[in-house]
Amino acid sequence: MITFNYETDFQISNEQILENWIESIIVNHDCEVGEINYIFCDDSYLHKLNVEFLNHDTLTDIISFDNSLGKLINGDIYISVERVEDNSKDFKVSFEEELHRVMIHGVLHYVGFKDKSEEDQNEMTKQENIALSLLKN
Image 1 (tube, rainbow, N blue to C red):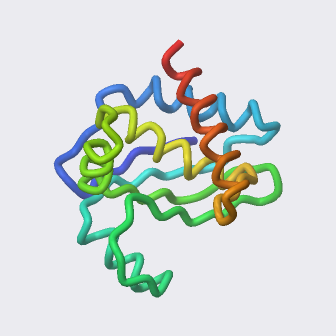
Image 2: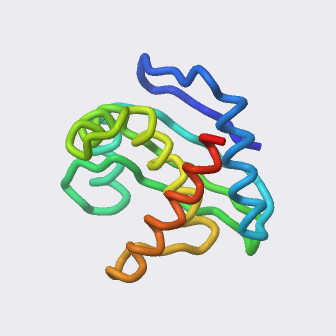
């Protein structure tokens, strides 16, 4: 089950479409959907989590807490809507495209993709692009 939670005024208008898309990406990677919670928040909320849980005193667009059990995908994905908006301007893409990229990024971590090395980052970007292309179809 995928749920969308809001700690800000922001609301997704197409929750069911996104839920189906995320589920299909998980299944395409031979995994099973467990419980995934998206929490949309602001910079302040996410910064506090970043300091408290990761000891990082920086702003970020996403923090994901992976609670997966083998191929059963579970976790909490916190997304700063403010960061996504700023990043969309920096990357010259729509807010919606950047939001979807960040949303699927967390799930791709859960199914096994990393992004620490340059090679891993390239593979993560490739997987994000594949996932985004499936949403557009």
